[in-house]
Image (tube, rainbow, N blue to C red; front, side, top):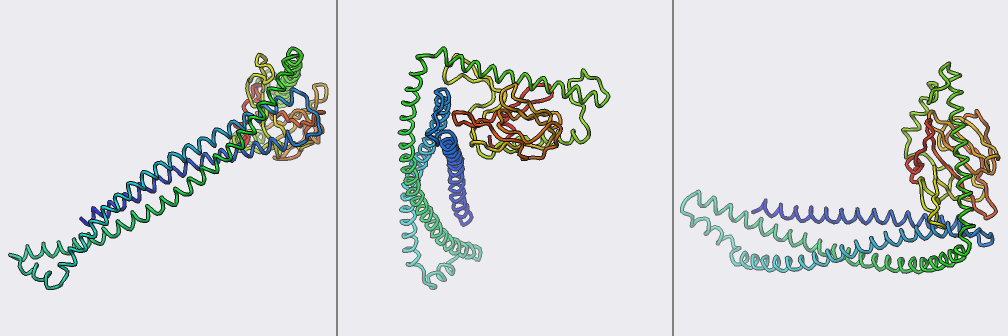
Length: 406
């Protein structure tokens, strides 16, 4: 009887702990996502929507607004998920509270009956008479054990009541907090949804003006994509030339498709790969406006935007820094629009495009986070860094898989 009651108490505490911990973990994960989207929205407002004096092009306005709407929708969704989880937790707690109250009533009633019964037979004389009336020593021993077990059971029932009472108090406290948290989330979401409604109206207004001359806007988008493609082709050409030069210097065939790496280059290449997912951002502050891959243009869905890297919106004249140690492979001049710096890290190359100023030259040894230039700020007031990671076979990889929390 004693061990059984102990196991019951332990089981109650264990189950309660696991349940609370699982719910807490889910809420923490959702809260972390919500904070991340809120931070991104704040950065977006600071970098793209803070300066009302500068007249942006309609294309830039729609692109920025489209990005902002997507982030705000993500924020609304994760906040809804949090509120829904809280609703489920509140309902579960209310059911648990109701069940515990019933259990406590039963326990208290049983305990009360036990106390009365114990009081009636608590005198030492009645206990002694109970033992002396035994038929033999074995029965007397069993009766003695029963008296001890009964006393222990009384104590354990009292302890069980304390445990359940404490749990009930904790659940009531949690319930009050959960309801307050839910009310706060609902109120915040109401504000975010109102802002979203205004942004959707503004987006529709801009798109109405664009539709009147869609052909012209589509042509501008296609022309910009052609310029980007031309830069990427030139990057691939420079990589091929660098590979040929490295093999010629090493006395190998110039037709080799990979770099002839020195022992030092091999170490850098290995370290670069081992730091995948931990590399620093190429700018201190920024939001990714366009991600890696092929996406539809927010202006004309029939036009596809091919991105071999990411486009990061940052501060005016923001400093650009190397994401890892290496050597400047090339500095592409204004023939291909604004300057681009290529840094070799063994058999990987990072490209920093659309620079306004360049502080390095071909052959320079670079350390991680070294400032290599500044981002170009256009007439719209936008500072966009085009960043990409290339392999020696001229293929590209998704920078968000390499840069920390991109």
